[in-house]
Length: 128
Image 1 (cartoon, rainbow, N blue to C red):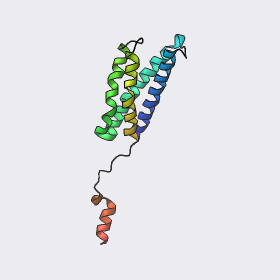
Image 2: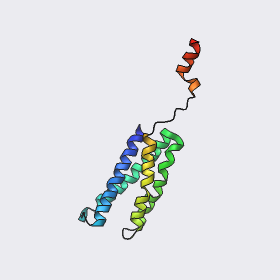
Image 3: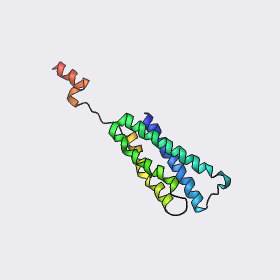
Image 4: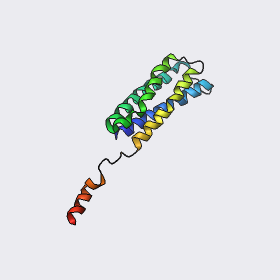
């Protein structure tokens, strides 16, 4: 349950960060002295992605590792510079892992109990 909330929060934070970055880069929005908003959204995205990774691993085991590769571009992006192609390329490279985290969080966990060992199957065997 926490993994769903964390994954959704990380995805919304990532989308807001990308939207703001794209709007500023394209000139549609001027943040002026409030450029710290993009930095705050970046920190929020990084922290929520770490939390999502931890929550998914705790709840889903190995299936939760799907978000972990997003942490590498998140760690490198401050050093990529804002001018040129590296910053946007790194930002876009995070998207597949965020989506995979959403899928992993919202997918129903597999029923690991064999059908012959469920309580219903035991009752049916006793009734025979």
